[in-house]
Structure formats: structure tokens, C-alpha cells
Image (cartoon, rainbow, N blue to C red):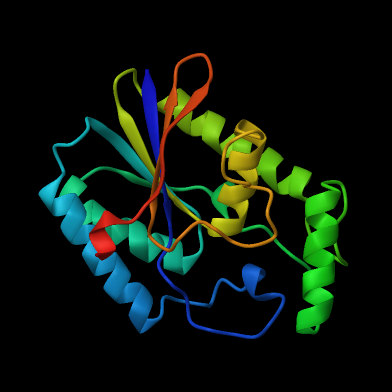
Length: 201
């Protein structure tokens, strides 16, 4: 059995832009830094919780910063994988109402994307390719840490667990910042726990 520990990045600097998911210049906010400090403390107190393999993250600076911070205690290799990046919504500025309409269309039709954006099917395909690569690098009995982003993780979880008690296909983002989600893998994935934020209490 292998384990994947999915972690959502810390809170990013705010913007009203609807193309912000593609903006890699958006770094962590002060709130995000505080969240990551709490997460790092959690890892320092629980670093023997699992047998760790490597730490993987997207190439977004806010994800890299989160990974570097928690790895200060794990002391494992950090590998950046572009395919773990956030879902790209669109390349045009939309009003709040237009964004809501487009989001609903995407959730109802996974083959649809706004102008210049990724369909949910496309982003899950690249995320799944990255996960498979990570699994191939992870030995039996080990746990890989992955720092990624809320929207793409939520879409991936919906594909894995379409009948789960939580609706991962909701247009609302339900994965909390710096939360921990554990997936066990042998011949298929099992959800060990979801959206855990004990470190933020």
C-alpha cells in the first residue's frame, strides 16, 4: 500500500481577476503564511507519523513556498511538477455573475471550457498523469506529500469518488487552505480522510 497526502497551498494574495488561476506571481498572503506556519508546526510534531518518501508540488510560488516550509522538518527531496498546477479557468476578465455562470457550465459539462480555459476533463487528465508519476516514484509503505491547489484537487477527487457523501463536483470550493487529504493506494484509491485542518485550531 502507498499513501498520498494532498495539501492545498496557503491563502494567496487577493485579486478580483477571473484569470488569477494562471497567475503564478500571486504569492501567499499574510494569512497564508500564518496557515503554513501552523501546518509546519504540525509536521514538526508529527514527522514520524508516516514513512515519508518525497515532497511534490506545482510550480506556482505559493505551492513551492508551502512545500519548502513543511519540508524543513521532513528533510526529503522536493520535486516540482507543472502538471500539479491549478485548473486554468479562462483568459478573459469576467464579471462575478459571468464567472458563476461559466463555473456552473463547466461542472455540468466536463468537456466545456470558457475562452482559452481548460475543461475539467483536461485538467484532471494532466493531474492524474502527475499522480501516476508520483506513485511510480513511491515505494510500498511510503507516503508522498503533494502540495497543489483547491479546484484541481476537488475535480480529481470527484473522478475518484463520484458517489462520496460530499459533492466534490460542486461549483463551490470546499477544500480548505492547507488542509490535509489522505489517499491510500494499492490497486485502487481509498479515501482515508478528507479536508483535515486540526493544525489551524
